[in-house]
Amino acid sequence: MSKYVQYGIPSSWTKEFEIKGISTTTFKNTSNKNLIERYNISEDKVKFVKSRLKRKPIDGDTLQSLLERNRFVCCLCKGQKSDAYIIHHIEAYSISQDNNYYNLAVLCPNDHDLVHREGENLTNKIPKEQVEKAKINWEKEVEALNVAVASQSLEIGEVDFLNFNRILELYHQLYSNPPHTKYKDQLEELKALDNLGGISIDFLKNNNYNENSPFVFWGPAGSWALSLHYTDLFKQILSTLQFTDLDHLLSVKKIKNILSEEKFCFYAGGLYGKNPGKPGTNSEITHLYFHRRKFYVEWTFDTKYMISTSSYIRLSHRTEYLIYGKIRTIENRMINGKEYIYINIRPYLFGLALRTKTRRPSIHYRDKFTDEEN
Ligand SMILES: [Zn+2]
Image (tube, helix red, strand yellow):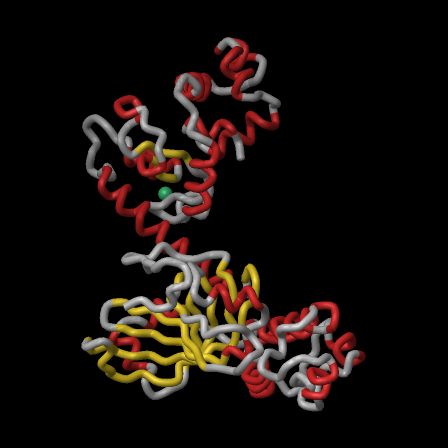
């Protein structure tokens, strides 16, 4: 990212300066005459850049985060008028000298002109409040887009849960060819798979491990390859099957539309959970959940499909998950004396979310090791 942008200079100009090999320091220390004659830069541009370079530059991290959260395009036209951008101060720099995140907005040169329109022709002037609002809304939209992209490509930090039986079932519904991944040969050599593509019970027994935790055993003995194999199969499923962002479904109107059918959805964000105890001792049903407004959403699952000891621990910690599942039931239900629209989902896979949304109200957690919120 060019240093010029930190001074509020349009991104479209920086390329010219880079090609001509003029750094911001050179620009500052070169006379206007030389810049115009030797470097062949227009006089208006020279004057504008010179005045901007007298400012305090915007902090690089702040700028990077602003640009990323705005997808590097104007928050007013979302890049429709131009790919170029300029960092705008919502409260004018001349008055505020405020380079903080909240005072900055990404605008295209065109909309930037409209915001700064002065004098007689104020008809199309864009008011400050409109910029502020546009920035907030666009950043929200970008967040949702990023999460949708991340979910489609299974951007997961670490997978915690893999219901391989349900993944296989779904795979067979979608494809006629037998499941294949780059781990398959290795797993067949270990005799880790049964005829149907599931995990062989004999294999688990021979390795002195337990059916109640088919993924929790020494990695090099095959557990890593098994979890990567099923994760990869699920990735293949995601390339065919659309999982809807649960946030889109959480309105009464939309929920009613999907009442009759089964629906695939994902959710990325903080969830409450319950850690039922040590892996391998027994297979137990537990849950992750949250409630928001009228809705109470619960994912119920068998702990036998947790894939590591740390994944057990995370169930009762401050964890932000990316979780894929299928809606099983939607009904009115009294929970803790309050009536909710209760949605039950059975997960296929979940793990650590790399991208989440800032939700209001955000989910608050209680201290570590307390597993229930009232
Ligand atoms: Zn624009």
